[in-house]
Amino acid sequence: MERPTGQVLAGSKALIVGIANEHSIAYGCARAFRELGAELAITYLNDKAKPYVEPLAQELGASLLLPLDVSKPGELEAVFDAVRTTWGRLDVAVHSIAFAPKADLQGGLLNSSPEGFSVAMDISCHSFIRMARLAAPLMDDGGSLFAMSYLGASRVVPNYDLMGPVKAALEASCRYLAHELGPKRIRVHPVSPGPLKTRAASGLKDFDLLLNEAAERAPIGELVDIMDVGYTCAFLATPYARRMTGNTVFVDGGVSIIG
Image (cartoon, rainbow, N blue to C red):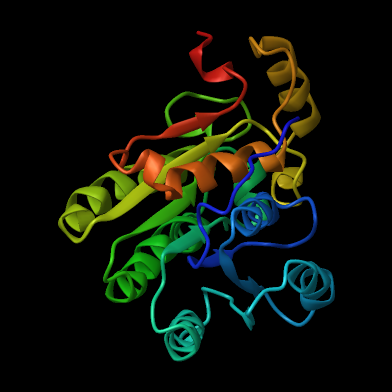
């Protein structure tokens, strides 16, 4: 695939949250933003994840590499304190994290526990709202916020179960944040990739069947990859998309248009 050329995001400061390894959607976003000239701040979940993320951050010349577990009080605030100290501002923030306990993720929505639902909603949805609240004061000249959704937010996808309502809440949150932050020239984009072989997706029951079905149904005839998602996000952060906000952007080869 021919790559975009030029440095239309030169000088931009982008925070990328959610890289676990080289297969992560967040890594595709980081690569795309870097190709277009942005400086990067990258987070890793914990000490166990750091050896997988640190080489990727070094490869991309990231200015910051910071620990972030959004379930731990103070860690998200510490990341933004470091961004403020180092850069003094922020142009882009990518939220590509989601979690649900395995028993709740694979046990069907009807049998999901209150605790599991709450954890999934907090980490997968409300942490994006908290991120937006911290990012907004650093976006004096406007900016772009990104959250990763999935088709299961708007349609029933077998075995997606608990995460369907959670992602629906995330997309609704993006719309309301887009309305609330629009006067500050901060645009909010829920991005909905097609199924990808990421570590997070591997926790879904019968995920290989989901991949195969998507490839068969896609009008383009093939699955998307992490760079397809990354380039879409990079485009949305440029002036070429300056009047776009709040609407879910599907990057799925057209699967979402098939009934």
